[in-house]
Amino acid sequence: MWQSLTLVALAVLPLLAAGGPRHPDAEVALDVFEPPRPGFVPEAAPSRFVLQRDGRVLVGGTSHIASGRLGKPETREIEKLVSAVRKLPGLGSAVTLGPGETSYRLWLKRGGGLEIVAKGDPAAAARALRPLAQLLERLSRFNHATLVPLAPTQFVVSAREERLDGGCRQWTLPLPLADVLAVPRPVSAQAASGWPSGGIAASVCARDRRYSVTLRPLMPDERP
Image (cartoon, rainbow, N blue to C red; front, side):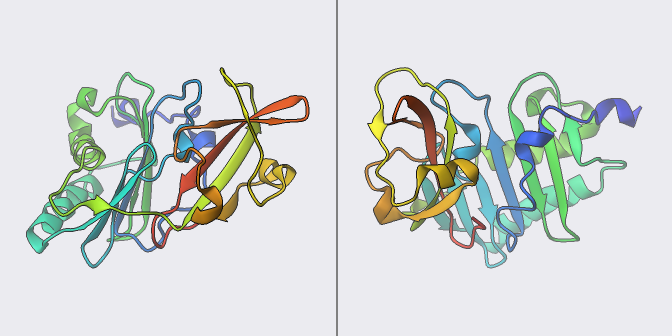
């Protein structure tokens, strides 16, 4: 019965494979990958939620980052939800929640490192998966009175050959475009000034080719 609730989302795994968590020192971290659309690259958006051991919390949107701090009661509330997920019998590393194309990558550190990739609408999850669905819903919609905007000091630049609608700009970043096409590279916030960031892609012209370029904001202590 449980196997029918934990179908491996094979189409999602190549997209989400990242060689480990973006935030190796975080207690809890969540990336949300909305369905891609023209001019929007979900992998380039900042992490949706990050909780550090000292109660600091980082929250990301399409391109912006905010920082805040939780009190002990609020931290315990999240820990209680995490504990309920860890107690789910037979929980696999890849889960289908229900219909829908949004994917979630959840990293839990406390109690032993655990990474879960879930796909679908948490609201449609089967009863046996409700603890996981509740945690995903709570973190993906997280808001808090202490949150204030946080300006990133670095971005990770990625590029791929793709023609986007509309015009295009010249490549002005201080890195060879060929290098960025081969592997994403970090760049300073000063160098990235004036470029779209996060999931919003820029259209770049180089000779007779067109490229989709994204700059993912790096959160503090995030692995490039």
